[in-house]
Length: 126
Image (tube, helix red, strand yellow):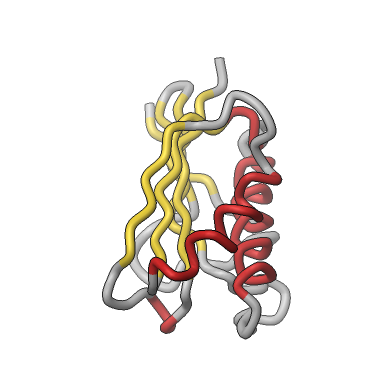
């Protein structure tokens, strides 16, 4: 059974997708960018603040499903430039102090709205 997950606390999708889909006990969260849901403004200029906004948006979506960061089993991090890795990784690490999820981090040519970081996650709630 597939359940569509959306919350007003996180940015609305900017295309034909949903914030998340729950299939059984697994939650697939679409890639989040540093967009502030309340204002529609992008956080930019400081990659640490951008990453925190992305993680906050992921948290709001997970909360809608009864999950939180500890339920994440897999993350995918997309960067506009690998030179951002160290700063993004430092903020990311604040959310996973033990039992960190599996992850890949890749640099891509361009991200939506020309942001520098996008993160998607998969969570599991038994």
